[in-house]
Length: 112
Image (cartoon, rainbow, N blue to C red; front, side, top):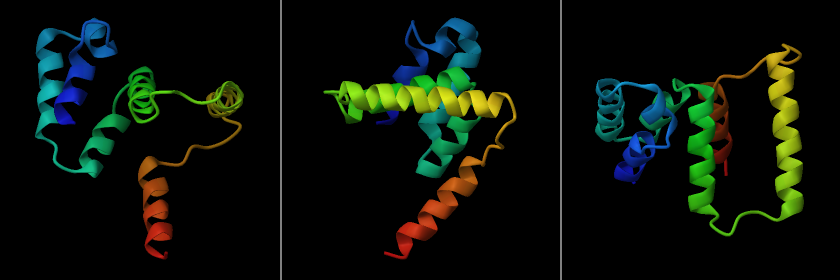
C-alpha cells in the first residue's frame, strides 16, 4: 500500500511531480514511505495542498470502488461537495479539523 501511495505522489501526471523539484518530491515520497500508522498518513495528507488531497481521495475511491458509483449518487455528491466548498470559501461555515472529526468518529465507533 505504501509503495502505491509513493507512486501516486511521484508519477509524471501527479500534482507533486509537476509542481515540485525532484529533491522535494523525493523528500515527500520518503516521508510517506517512513510512515507506519494511519494517523501519520492522515497528518501528512492534511498538510498537502487541497488539489493533491482531492487527487488522493479520487484515487482511493477508484481503488475501493472500481466500478464507480451510480450516476445519481455521483451527481448528488458532486453538488454537495461544490456547495460545501463554496460555503467554506465564502466563510459561511467554519471548518472542523480532521483531528477533531476523526477523534469523534473513534469515540462513536468504540461505543458499539
